[in-house]
Image (cartoon, rainbow, N blue to C red):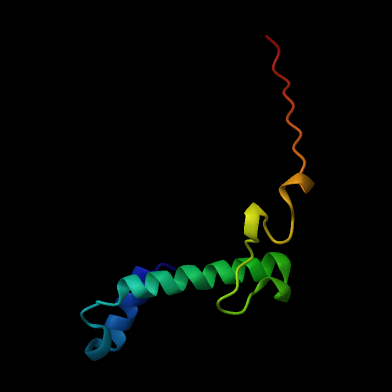
Length: 81
């Protein structure tokens, strides 16, 4: 369900508060944040949801405590020329 549909439903149900739909962008940002948190929770469980103001991005380019040197890449190709 998109933020536009939610806002349209709110405008219909409570026109005195949401009739002008001036808070659509705010709703879009809140919905994006909520979906991101829900996705992390579904993938990683309760430990993935962080308190407000915290970030999973570590200083110096690491991510979630993983150093770039710990990540290996293996690129292979089955293309023959």
